[in-house]
Length: 291
Image (tube, rainbow, N blue to C red; front, side):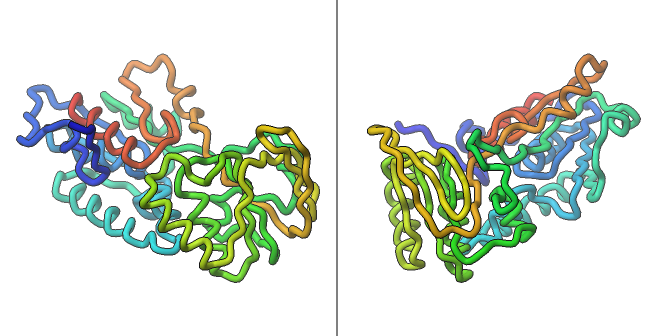
């Protein structure tokens, strides 16, 4: 009787065992963004009859999945992207890569429905010094767009796996990594079994974890913290670089620019709320059923 969800097959959670009925009034649907939410929406909607086009700004589908797949042990995510690519082709979705949508291009396309799955941008916490030259967000590091020194502090304000994977990756590339976590254990929403695997890998790679310490100031080489319960202040020294693993905030620029348009506008995936991938595909599937 427990709730169940599947990232790869969101129909299971909805108990949709039979093919979805085709619509009697197919509409012209434009999906903006080729991440997990956008891909699932495009496939599901096209299976019901609408003419679906997907615009992806980058040169490949997958969104942030492509960054996740760069982390150790996470290459299996690429199998999911290839699976969705096959489904998109089979469903007859027109996929346009290297196509950045703007309010003007969307209006020129003249869709009946525009579904915005444009993702989120990295969240910068309100920590003094977080805008320093040697402070980088996790996405930039995953893209290899940031030069890091030997000793790296990872500031964690994300309750899931991503900070663990980043710390693991950095340590295995030769960095001395220390994670600063505000909770009494990292990744509190991850199941104990999966978390045990990650903690074992981090221990093996030599990652140090400082728990229940909120970072209050970054003045390299020092990291200033405060214990979340006692409020006792501490200083941790010897760091060359900082990586911010602090989640994301929705990218709402396109949504705001399209407010009041004559066509329907929907927002999904991280552009709606940055969460786990299972929520993105579930949302894409449920919206696709309605179009």
